Image (tube, rainbow, N blue to C red; front, side):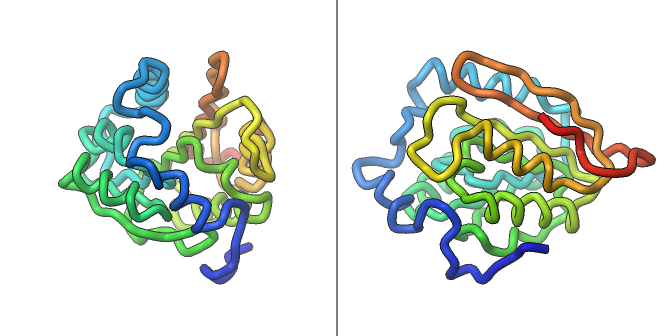
Length: 204
């Protein structure tokens, strides 16, 4: 496993992530943007099951997608590095469990059967992306995985297309790649655990 010390920076620093929320807890207008509402709906439509035992959302932001995910889970856990985002997420999803963590770091414990990574992979560098994939692979080999990535320039080390490619190549468990759904500005990729299908996950 690639896992490095939590103090190691992978991609965007904690200071930079906190700065995104300097002027408010909704920098991407998740609450008011039609684009975001449609993207959330398409993300939810990509899920293979109506209900889950435990959902882990990595990069939960202010909890606006988490509000929808939590309705489909017995337990919802959100992870983010920005304190202001997490404060908003706790209001949006009062029944949720939240963890403040800057990746790379150990992912939260739990019997997660769905892991969602929405607009977070391209905030990491290649090593950080691989670390996240390898942790999911090792700790929750039977979990469904859904990744949403913006297709435009990210202003970070990786763009969304490159980041999801690193992620897919790092998955070594038994998965069926469900394909991706392209929208003009983002893509949604999904993987289902598939017992008996050995080797790397299908690349996007």
